[in-house]
Image (cartoon, rainbow, N blue to C red; front, side, top):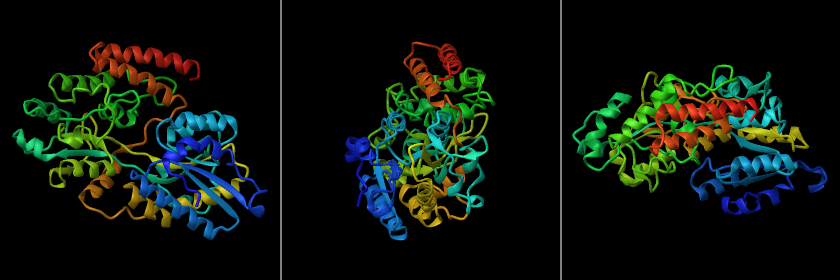
Length: 416
């Protein structure tokens, strides 16, 4: 089998991918399709086994298509993809998020994939298709949907004399001093600029009623009063001892982090696999999964993962067959079960499970897929640095967001 583990793929991805792009001269006339996949399934061994089986099953049903699935790490993903597309040597299909999809579509790195869903378009969640539809053409085939929500360590709250779990910003702020007196942060937060703001600051910004960009995407809006309120919420928590001491620099890690070792009492944007890591760290009996937090609004983050067709592809029809197969109900059920994700189709039942899976599935109604503009990733990087400065105490909320907005507007004016 040709599925590579993440460690191997990291070192060899671009070399192996040079064989990517369909080549009718290989394998007795067979089409070749290379797919770059990422750790949607958190357990490395389980991920390798799953995609190995997908590859084998697909090839068994499609003897004229030689499928190679490369498993790569999340780290450095954008750089690797951009380099591969620019060089014309890389994957035919690649797993992307909606904002990445627009980013590569704008630069001519992707082709439409309407042909992969022509017989099943009505089966997909409309929102999962809409967020990757640009200029009336589809640029991503959804294969799963993520969901995040609030998760509590009830033992820590109870030890601080708190029996009702906080569900609003006001509740979280009110609980902070009692937990801090026990050496516990009420809420985890990952402020490292390496981390996506989709799982840290953006949900809070949306809960405050704000947005990253204006509706037409021509300007940033995070420096408005809603953005200031969201950042001030974090700074007020920090002052009350309600965030981890290293919140400004820490990564978004449950296993081995504050949520996993019992020094933070709740996370506000956790996925299913992180619930399991938290249970393993502090005991399943102490972990309760709730609804998304409410500020001015009740919002969380959740996006479809989509298979995008790169400009490298030589045989689009073969790539469509692969994308259609991996997004099919049969594969989707198994993927959601293995990855702790949720269906991007209406004809697929959500994974069976306990109250955590039920709560995460219920949270999908509050999920936003981020804000999709061509400069979304670059603006995120600019904003991350200024948020960190505020958390490190060198800037006020107003100044940090104003400085980020000035830099972001210049970036937008230059087209990224």
